[in-house]
Length: 430
Image (cartoon, rainbow, N blue to C red; front, side):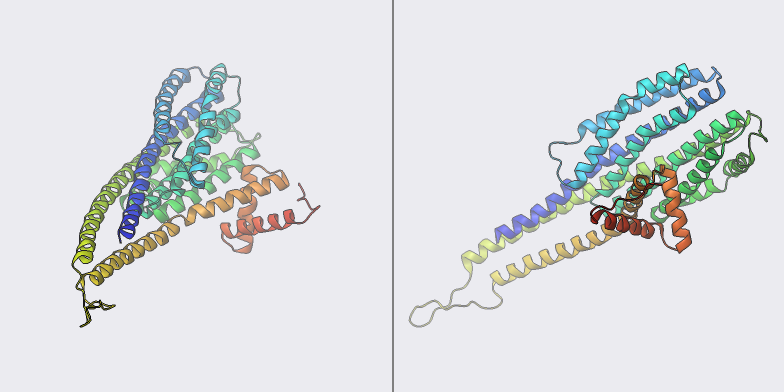
């Protein structure tokens, strides 16, 4: 009986250790949130400097760079606290690989910042340069959500990741809009990019609203209808009407930047509330797991005591020849012990099954996102498309067929797999 009790306790310890590791990951996510926002602000100011060629933005840019470096050091320290020696499983491999990419991207930031200050880089290239570490950091948050072991924490992480992703797309929209307004008009490629970024934002925020709760939803809905957002929508319409033949005043670049920044800062307030809630939830889960483990230990001690008592004092029946009979009474202590252990095992099995089902449902949107990203990569490789072009192709196919985006992505992957399985057949590039 001791083996069964030992493994019951081992199961509870494994859960608690998983939650403790998750608590460290959630603290890392909070630090990443701060760094991403700092880099987004630095990216926006860099585009103002490059687009306007006005040296007045240099001093503000220096302060934003200083803040980014402070948060970068904090994120690095969080990385150092992760136990890379104890890492195992595919989810850890993906997480550590994402972190390696981020650390590599950090190494290129010094040269990027120098080129911005010397104004030897275009706004588009600067945007892409800053977006590289930001995208890597968001991928770390994605892997944290995908490897979380608690359904409620996973739901919170899914909401947070999609909100952060939507906010990053809003930051890219800010940078793209600044470049166009600073020139007085938007090129067709910039206008297509703005439309793509607006659509992609909406998809992220739709998933956020599916998983977020309570006051977070109310705050987001207020932001979507406030005056800043309404003014930004009007400027989007102005941008769509600009052309080389119909330019607008370059001063609109500063207006656009100010409005977009105020909207993004309001998003950051919601994001901060989510990260605070996430840390509190993780802490509560670890405390509950620790209490449950102690309860299981107490139960194990009681059952162990019952087992010893059953072995020592179980009644023995003899016949007149002093030969021991084969069976004891049905309600003896040994049978009670067996029932107690089986009841505890049954309860733990039901709880773990329920947790598994909740976890699978919470991870559904992450699985769909993986499908879409894989399908985009396949289309980019087959047809030589850019990221937003591949996404637009999937989106158009979904609208034409009245299907979900994830279903279309699965069809693309199935077709790609079929082509790759046929010898001598290679997908045609456009």
